Each structure stands twice: as C-alpha cells, then as structure tokens.
Length: 426
Image (cartoon, rainbow, N blue to C red; front, side, top):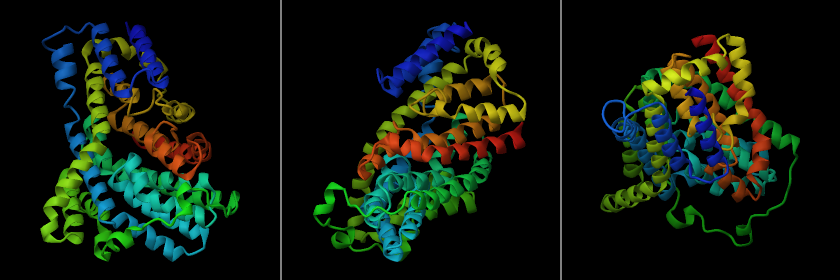
C-alpha cells in the first residue's frame, strides 16, 4: 500500500512540474487519493470528508491570517511611501559606489523580507532598487539576485513563516523562533557574500536597459513626499514585539499595521486608507491562502493512521539516522525543492514533513530544520516562485539565469541549516 501512495505522490509531483494542475488543486486531489488508498472511510472518524477535508482545510487558519496581515502591512509600506523612502535614502547615500548601493538595497530587502514574502516583497524593494543598481553598473542578474538574497536573509524573521511552521509541525513558537535565530547568520552571510563576490566578479556594466528608463519615472517623493523618519521603523516594530518582548505573532503584526497608519496618515484619511489597503491585501494574500488550505488538507491525509502505517517502513528505510549521512543526503537532495519538486515545503514537501513526524522518523524540530533550510533555497532560486520570476523579468533576465547565479549561495545556507539540525537535534 505504501508503494502505491508513493506512486500517487510521484504522479502529483509530475502534474505540478508539468503545470497540468495548479499546485493547490494537485495537493487536494493528492490528499483525497492518499486517504482512499490508506483505507479511510468516506465519513466518520479518520475519514475523507470529515477529517481530511473538513478538519484539514482550516488547520492552518492562523497562518492564513498572518499572511493577510503581512500583505496588509506590505500594502501600507507601498502606499505610504515607507518602502520607497528606505530604498531612495540608501541609493542617495551610496551615490555612484556600486557595492555600497547593492549592500544598501540588500539591507532594505532584508527588512521587507521580515514583513512579507513572495512577489510583493520583491516589488517593494525592487521597483526602485533594481533600476538604481543597474544604473550604477551592477549586472542585471546580480541586481535581481540581490533583491532575492535580501528577502531570504529576512525570511528567518518573517512572522507568517513562524506561524506556518508552528502550526504545520505542531511546534511552539519559541521552538520555531529558536531555530530561525540559528539559521539567520547563514542566510545573512550568504547574502552579503553574494553581493561582494558577484559585483566584483562580474565587473561594472554601465548599461541601462529597462524599458522605463527612457522616460523619467514619477517618484514617490514627487507624489507624496518622503515618509517621516519615524515611520521608517515600521518593518522592525512587529519583529521587536515578537522577538524582543515575545508578543504573539498576530498582535505583533497588527501593531505594525497600526504604527504604519498612525505615523503616515492624517486622521481624516485613516478610515479610507485602512479599508483600501486591506482590500488590496486580500488580493495579494488570496493565492497563498488557497495554497495553505490545500497544505492543511494534505497534512491531514498523510497523518491518517492507515497512511502512516503504510509509509512508515518505506520512509524509515531511506531516511538516514547517522548525523553525517543526514547532512550529506539532504544536502545532495537540495535540487528537489526547486521547480515545485517533492521537497518544496509549500507543496508535496509539507506532506513528506508530516509523514516524517507522524511516523516518528525524526523529531518534529529536526523536520523543522529540514523544511526551513529547503525553504531558503526555494525562496531565492526556484524559477517558478513568484518573487524570482518578478525580479528576473523586471531586471531584464530569465529566472533560470538568476537560479544559476544564486543557487551555490543558498545551497550553502541549506548546508548550514542541516549541520545545525544534525548537531543539535539528532
């Protein structure tokens, strides 16, 4: 029975890779198929309808709310000019020094990456940052990669990600936070190294190629003026509350929303701005929320007793227990998290993580180390991820070019995460 489930999983991966089915739809169909193969009844306890669909769909509800709040805060950073002001100040400080400009944009991208992820994060930092970097001679691929590496450096502190791993892996927030603090130095070091090496290795290319370069764009400063200096602290407000004062994630993010609003908006305009940005946040958050509904359903399916019983001997046979082999094997498997592969945590990888925990192959915190390390790779180098596609296209290169340039650096981040996991939790 376990072999049949694995074959169905492989078919699901193929459907996602070939884009025959959207990821969310494929995961739901896969979950229902696994449940039936595992012998789950249609209704009742541990059933397809009541357990997998009814209980699985809202299982990650807290994560979905966190995604919505992060998107709302991202919308406010954009509309109030906070993100644009941060990037412009960095560019003005850097002048015509390419490395300084790139490091400054990297810092802003890291800040933005702690607030929200995916394409919105890339756009907040990249709309001004990518043209600015290209204008001072940084190669296009390096400019796009700088935005992505910065977002990935901020990802260990992205509060919705904390909530996702806490709920999906049934771990307390302090445990997730503790590992993220260990992963952050690797992500930051790789991001800084990427800028220092790639800007020097590729040399300076004084060529402006964006289509919008022929006409001077209207800046946010000309439209609204720069955001006040104290408003620029908005990205760190939720982080300080959650990390420094251990405030719960959702209140921390909501406080960030209110801080952005109060420091940039006149009282008579607050109501309209709140509603406008909230409605815009729903548009941004809709796609990931649907994906999290599907992931919740898949997790419910792979945790069914029949599925665990069928998969446990097979998964245990191929899962290394020796710490050294653990690091070597999972490092070699890094490419399987690309192109929506089986180790992508926002796809089938979530199901595999659920099996590893439910079957007792690894402790949940070790699976956290695996999943978060792979997520660092996916967030930067996967040519199918929205932030990679947007950054590459906006810079005038292909996502595959960005993947090839950034992959060695994020591969090293994953290796660091695996080493910490093996040394600490195995």
